[in-house]
Image (cartoon, rainbow, N blue to C red; front, side, top):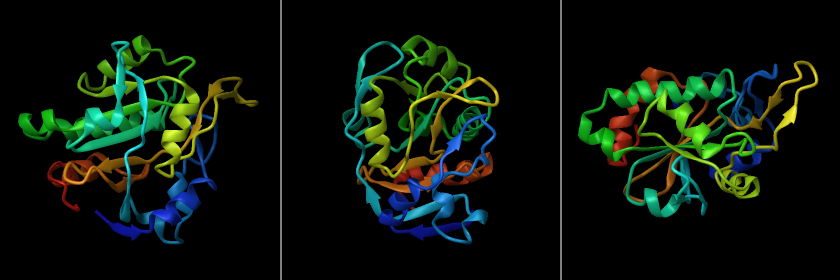
Length: 217
């Protein structure tokens, strides 16, 4: 995989410049795509200064409170912000991770936490999230809750999301959000590796064994 090291500050600055509206006719680029002129060929970025895990207490698919920091402490963790009504980027990203995860030994699969946080809490109830994720990977954690809490949590990772709105062209309700997947180390709990929507099954398959150990791919 081709990788590049970026300063966390640069990613935060870039996040406010480019967003992706799933299925709304946007170009599908993730916020990080504007950081450097040559990033169009990159799928993953190692951060020189890892992000802290967002301090979010949300609701899981069972309707129970889920403290993200507490529940994922000391575990290799991937987090993605998206929504279940997304027709393209969100399901593709989650399915890519799911396929790669299944290639891991059972013990390593059980260690990994993959967390999907909805950017459309108005429609993505715990039940709806549960049904959607069950069709991808039953072990994936789905979280919903107050939009302001979700937005603030995403922002601490340099990922921008906006409230849902109706697309003028299609009339469909869409959610504009960053399309990165952030990986957290089980050793430091820091978010040190970021994938954009160009990441493939092969990318994740090659990297997950090292992410499990908290190593740089």
